[in-house]
Image (cartoon, rainbow, N blue to C red; front, side):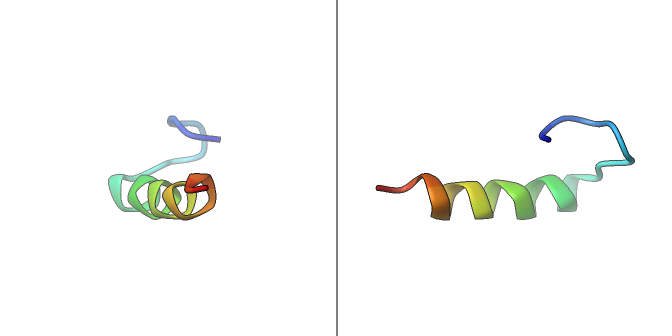
Length: 26
């Protein structure tokens, strides 16, 4: 998921990180 498989650009990772931060915050 996180890394670089299908052309993951920094912006895409930033979006994923934002989603993860929102989901992981308990």
